[in-house]
Length: 88
Image (cartoon, rainbow, N blue to C red; front, side, top):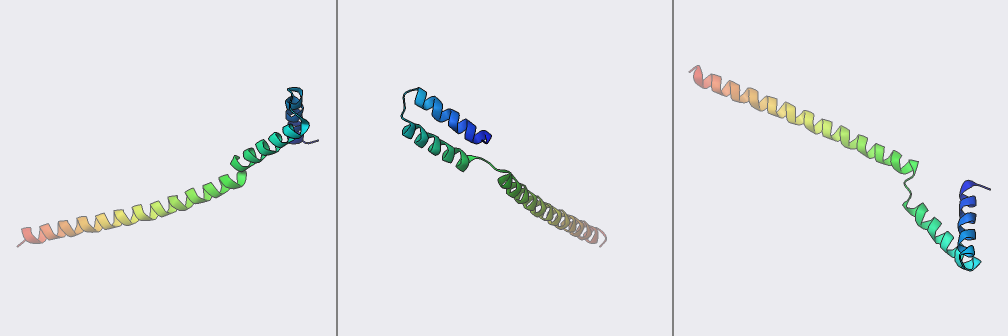
């Protein structure tokens, strides 16, 4: 018996010992298991998240690089403009 099956069995046993019918306990255990499975973050989810973060990182690096090049070009343009006015 797997650990999860054992825990589910123990949960059902505990509920029936507390006065529930076995049918009620099984229904509660089934729904609780479904809720946990639907809300459990899996390794696959984390892999998808890592992939998305990596894509965002690359996109930000490209944008930052473009901004640095653009600001450098603008600075050079301003310096050349000022120099041309001063040299006349």
